[in-house]
Amino acid sequence: MPICLHHLLSESLKNSAEAVAIRHKEAIFSYTQLAELVSEQARALQALHLQRQQRVAIFLPKQIETVTSFFAVSLAGGVFVPVNPVLKAQQVGHILNDCNVQILITSKSRLQGLVDVLLDCPDLHSVILVDSAQADEKQESLRILGWREYMDLAGQTLLPTIAIDTDMAAILYTSGSTGKPKGVVLSHRNIISGALSVAEYLHISCQDRILAVLPFSFDYGLNQLTTALLTGATCVLMDYLLPRDVVNAVVKYLITGLAAVPPLWAQLADLPWPESIDDHLRYMTNSGGKMPKAVLQKLRAKAPDSRFFLMYGLTEAFRSSYLPPEQIDIRPDSMGKAIPNAEILVVREDGSACVPHEPGELVHRGSLVSLGYWNDPVKTAERFKPAPGQLAGLPLTEIAVWSGDTVTMDEEGYLYFVGRRDDMIKTSGYRVSPSEIEEVVYASGLINEAAAIGIEHAVLGQAVVVVVSVNQNVELNTQQLLDLCKAQLPNFMVPAKIEVLSEMPRNPNGKIDRKLLSHQFADLFQS
Image (spheres, helix red, strand yellow):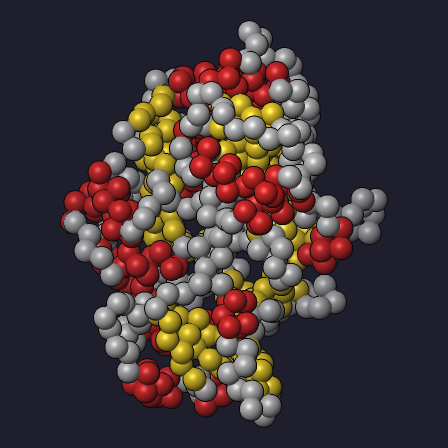
């Protein structure tokens, strides 16, 4: 049984030595080859004097060096920090400074864009360039190494390091309400538990080929890699330009498992899929937001033999619930039950348990609860609090994640999403969940994406505004959409305005950036 992140590789090596572990474009790496690359890189990191629990940032797209860096840092006793490759220099600089990164692994072109911000990163002492044999960049106080120089540092023997399952393994940065990303600290135990849990209910085996299209800086994206290596499966790395590229890759590599977020699923649902996909695509998963029913219906029709899993999660505890595919038609509005090895509670503000169907806050307890936000005790205390219902005789307090999401639970333990505290719209004295409005808008078939937001209004408190995007060269009849809302929603839920954008703004994880939309339209009802 794996204990630390790098054990995922060493354990699978026992039974899958010559099986394909990683595929990137036309390059193929067996488990043996991957393990050799990781070992060599770990020895090079030790030659750079990486100390136990020091942070190493990886600012790269998906490629073999990205994967080997994660596992080499773990093997050498460090903590890896995956930086989303779409971030701008200032955001990268914030991450490097916030968690005191000592070593940065990136590319020559990306380094050129970071020159100014690196001057303000006092803990950073080395930069490694994956695409440069010999680095010609010079920067005072920084050691810049090309990949060959770096790997030539590797000693003959890997020095022993101490690592246990509760040690830090990674720090993932997630958007925060202040605009500055927060670093969620994951232990080895968190990552291993997540891989074991997901692999169990998705029935992932060594026969699977998983397409990794989501960023590895997103816990949902990273899990595509960890579940694959846990089970001896193949992980196919992909950074796509167009949604069509994803469909083509699923066909080309005979993908059996595909994970995405609602905006990408909405785009994929509008594309033609060859019938042959159904011969090999075994499962699809959604997390990162509620899947519109109309989109789900289209996807299921394109691959009727593929099983679709609807899931709910939060970076602070990775994944909380999943809805088995056979329950989709029975409970179409449910977000499912707790994943294996997690308990989900629904509680009132005082921490007492809600009765069935009573709205309350979702609280997650178990081995997936992360170690808090790096260097931020205030925000950590807001979200990581004592688990409800603990026995008085326990001398140490168990900490759970209080999600901030309002849900209900039925008599059989199935959960139903009501809304997120900071997304809920308060209008005319009513609390309105954006998803209820968005479901109607999506079902119209007139738009690509939609986000319902609350905008300050002198009379209503907040007015409901729906922001939508449409295909190029499509002229949306907003009155038709508004009439549809009036026909299907109570008056207090009907949008006061519908705004049309050519493209929705997104946060680094690919989700619609609701806070940015709220800011963009903040003055809509100001006289």
